[in-house]
Amino acid sequence: PYARKTSGVPLAMHFDVDSRVFTFTYETGLNPDAPTELFVPQYQYPEGLTVTFGNPTGVSPTGGPVQAPTYDVFLPQQTIQIYHSAETEGVQLTVVIAPHADSAAAAAAGNGKAA
Image 1 (cartoon, helix red, strand yellow):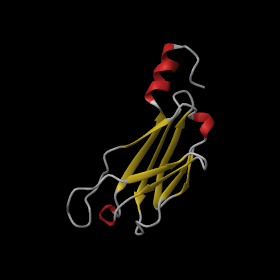
Image 2 (tube, rainbow, N blue to C red):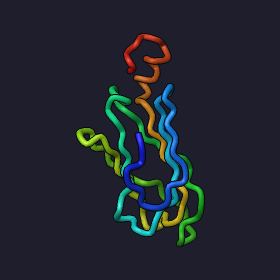
Image 3 (spheres, rainbow, N blue to C red):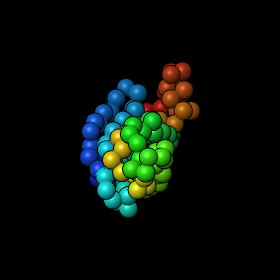
């Protein structure tokens, strides 16, 4: 997996081959209409994936709480698009992509179902 397009400034990107966990941290940009796009190859997540967000750091320009981003998963295109609101401009966000919990449990049990 990797960040294909970033609506903001990329800060860190890491993929752990053993756990198949991808982490991407970025500072959100000025244009909330332009999504951040991640490429997530199906062969890394054959039994599904989960998307979670770490706690955003920073304060919204309005001084209120930072809203969690929303996202869409496009399986045929192997992409995830992440959208943030104007209130999160300039906020550091971390997105974590991991194998679906059921497939991770299967791999931990050693039954060979997760690739």
